[in-house]
Image (cartoon, rainbow over all chains, first blue to last red; front, side, top):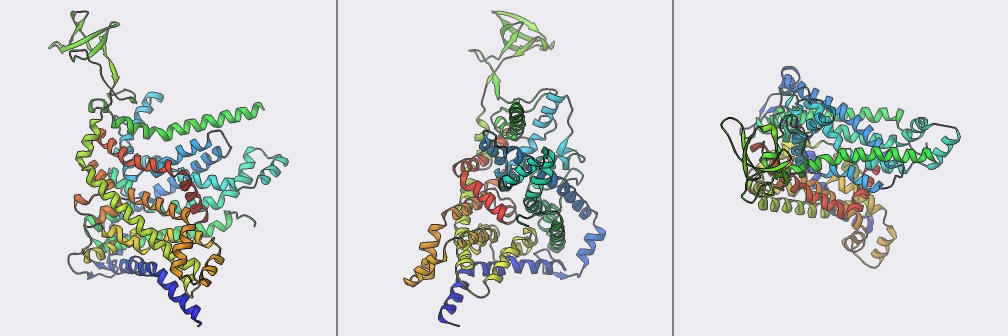
Length: 297
Length: 330
């Protein structure tokens, strides 16, 4: 090793030291410890007791609330992510028509995404208020429909949360907008020469060209969907009511860990969550070979 | 030509309609935050009221009503269920349906005062700002150093380390939360700001990634020339690379601030004493204790949201660039 190489190694390690320490202390160690705790009964106060796979068995076999939480989370993610993406793409396509005032519209659609989640959750609780909220008031005023109880009604609470999630499609929209700008104009010209109508232009040019962006947004959406927490915590005061209809996976994990101080149980939930997210992401990535079209291929 | 104009018209119609839907919750928040409690809850069948109003009063402080096309003063409710009105210096008894109360614009700023008292606004604001700025400083320092190592220094193992950065981005935070809690508790850190701030000084994978991508774009010749001139590695980092990376550093600072300002899970888990509550946590606590004080609740939500919106308008370019950059290259 030359002096230069030795100096480089030393400097490289020194500059990277924060991450090396951080990786060991706040990523690797916790990851391993979650595994260890998941095999124990542990409430922080008393020393942990080994229980083997009991936590996992209890979760999967004896705890119906676990399955409810999983069902709620999957229900929410499977509906809110694709619908939200379609909405974001639709808005981005409208904006990419180079309409006047594009920047103003873009700002309007984007603003909700930066509102602190606690504030937007409190706000939407009020929008959903069955008697005096904006939503039911507007439904009554314009359509003469008597709106449901939304967050107060077990059948409407998840649709309400999905509806609320559409308010923040602006982030995905901005990314789509950049993706659309990258579509070569020549492709549209060729399509026009071939006599393609608007629908074919969309289906054969626009859509394939933005599939990489769809993939990216889909993966992010899946990961975030599974970790959906703050909104439900704020809106149901951490209870996941009514009738457990908004008991989401991350909320149930939090309750077990920090409310009942059942750290072992919570850790087992965390590992199962990790595996689910990992396999869902992998499945999407593997499937993407069939539907994602990369430039220049 | 006509079809093009029609298309423009159609897209504007849809965009305006969509814009109204997106703005409506904001407007509703602002409107409610300025309403008196008596105006917040709608009577059955009443349409949503957008403009906060209050009763018009005459010089003697009596509410004014419109009665048979004339302005009248409301005096009192009779035992018979009728209301005593004074019209043109004469007194009449009228049924509820016969008159309508007169309204004028009335902004109830008291909601803000009430909200500020309930959550101890100066204290929560101070906590939020302290945490936000500490985390921004920590993130900028640590992530730029690490990114420098991964992009500007050739050393064996750096690619492996960089793969670790990418891998850690994929781990859901909840998976690490419990051991972190135990760790911080054993260190005696829970109930202080340390669990919120200290990890920032150990680098955040996402921003390491962002900064590395940016640093890679700076010509390596600059470093080589500086080395020949006898400049130390830290000198190159501080005097050449950092000054050239202001846009990427600004994006990092902005996004970090934004995330910390709104962060809820960490304060919820790690803070114990309400004297340390950040604004986001204080608002949630407020909401859980006073569920129907919608006026003050909306006032507080407005106050938490406003700085972020101002920040957005001040830094719009950095913002949108940052989103597309991280989004597309991620």
